[in-house]
Structures are given as structure tokens and as C-alpha cells.
Length: 210
Image 1 (cartoon, one colour):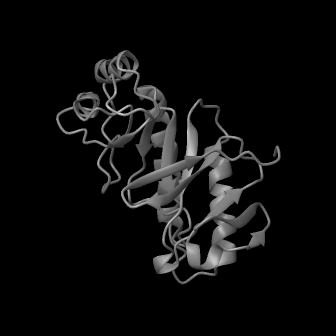
Image 2: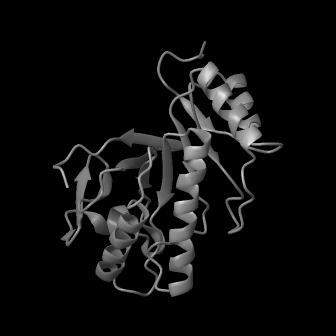
């Protein structure tokens, strides 16, 4: 039985095999968990062996761990003006959605990236198009978009996203956190507010159908 009355989990290591993450979550009394499915600081990803994925899914199911969240690598930057980095970011996000599905994870969480020296409006529109492309393929996995403190001209940052509106994006303030909600052609996106010091506070987008 979980050690907590409500669903609570931590980010656990996959060292030694991705199925080991489930064992670590169980040892900590978790009823939810987050992992990287691969090296968070590199582009190359080794395939997940079907045998290891099966052990992972069985461990999660047998111990009622839900939700299971896969965090994307830190290198992804959907807002980048560098064409190659932007392409690799879309590819990397798509790969993580597939890996999450293989593991039976319900969610993938990602940062939107930094606009760098580019205009925020054009970067924001670029991110929306990238997310639409990624979510074109059918998948049971829900994509969660994580906000940030706004340093380094990151998208979905508190200082500049308050009450902004543009084609395909609605930005608004909820409580102490600003959220960026893509509202065009995205039925599988949700919000991840970093309002806890060491974690995520999840909230499904329940706005109008798109």
C-alpha cells in the first residue's frame, strides 16, 4: 500500500534498467512517479528492450502506481530559431511520446524552450505549430507543458505571459503561476505548473473544444 493518503510521487532514477525505477518508487512509498526514459542531457536514445518495458508495465500495474510521467531531455527547445535544433526538438519530443506509450506511461512533460534573441510572438507561434505537428499522430499519451520562472526569455515564463493573446495561443494567470494554453488543434495537452519547489502541480485543460 502507498505510504500516502493521496497520489504522491517523485522523480526516480532509471540507472541499471528502466524497470528499476519502479522498484525505487515502491521503496519510497510512491503512488505516482516521474522518470527520464533516456539520458536527459543527450540526443541519442537507446531503444527500450521489450522485456524491460514489460517488467516496467507489470511493476506499475501490480503496485497501482498512477500517474507515470516521462520527462523529456533538457536539450529540447521548440522555440529555438536554429532550424536544426528545432527539428531535433520536434523529433525528440515525438520519440519520448512513443517511449512513454511503450512503457504504459500516461503523460510526457516538456519545457517549451527559449526564444533567445528572437521575437517572443514569432517563437510562440512556432512552438504552437511544433506541438500541433507532434500531436498529429494518435497516441493515448497526454502531453503536459511545464512552465518556468521566465529567465533567459523562456516561453511560458511568468514575467511575460500574463494576459497575452495571439493566434493559436492563450496566456493567462491562474493563482501565482502564468500558463500558456495552446488552443488550436490540441486535444491531448494539459498544464503542469511548477508551483511546488521540487515538483509539478497538474491541472487538466478544460477549456472549449478545439
